[in-house]
Figure 1: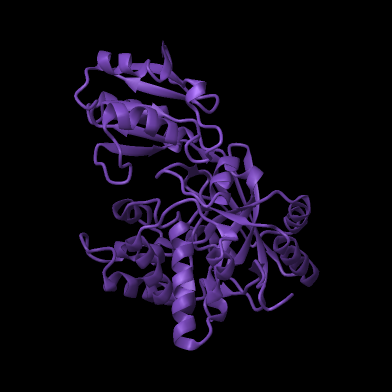
Figure 2 (figure 1 turned 120 degrees about the vertical axis):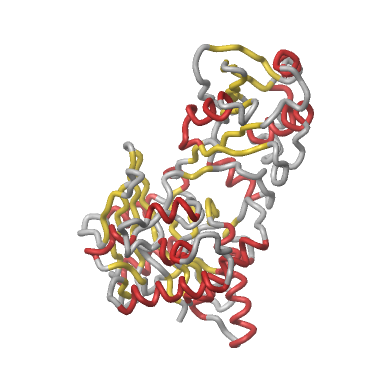
Length: 415
């Protein structure tokens, strides 16, 4: 392999909990829980990785979660887990197979160190903008720990041989196997056989691209840390790679990211429904609408459900962003009828992950907090990949990946 072509992924000596501690350590991703929810989650769980990923829970309520004291406490808690033998590092570079199982859905991926150079050159492709403040937070966390502890969720084009190698690895006993509070089973296997390591590296290196599903801020922060260390030290070595779990695109599960609006922009309910007829076929129905295909969404308004179907002739089939359902809703309904033009900043709109179900949409409207809710058709993986391949970005809150990875099961130490 030539020097101008670094490997897309590589094996690494992972830091992970001893088998008997895996269930006690595994924690939801840092950005899934609020600080207060995290405080409640760790009650009676002194080994929870939330003590590392959200260390404000061990400091007085009301502390700024981005204050220096929080990162210092995170490092202190991390070191305590190392000193106590709760976390141990594998002696040699390895890959790991990681399986998620819930409600009959199974996805098996590879834990690897992914190339910062490939991210910087867009071979590891993005589909979202990042916010500098969120990047700053992840940079400080990585530097405080000298480790990447929150994996980036990546997708790879389907590869039967990769899947076969992972299936072979999962015949052994797992090094971690637990069922989280969410009901998701997390299982991890060690892949330390040299031939398997070499073959996996070769198979991935032949792939044209990988795709970020979740973790844009973590990957951007890893790139910044690598650049900083290159400048300071003349080389970054392990910081030139970032912690990732890579699943076949066909196994990924995207749930809808639904929308709720605080008001109807001065329209009466009847006037709003009448105005929808200009862009949609509108049908009042008896039960919640789970959109069966792109171009269809459900609407909950004043105690009733409606099925909305965007008129096919108004769907721009050649534009990978504008044909997304979230874009169709924004361009046909939210902007012209409800006056919502900035999905990132307008306080009149909120977003509800599909994991929360129709009941949450009904609750927020029935309570009077919101005026209307839209139940979306989920973005598909081929849509995400098309947007990323085109070098474009999706509207905010376009995808909700489920199940979520756990923090703490494998971390990447920066030597």
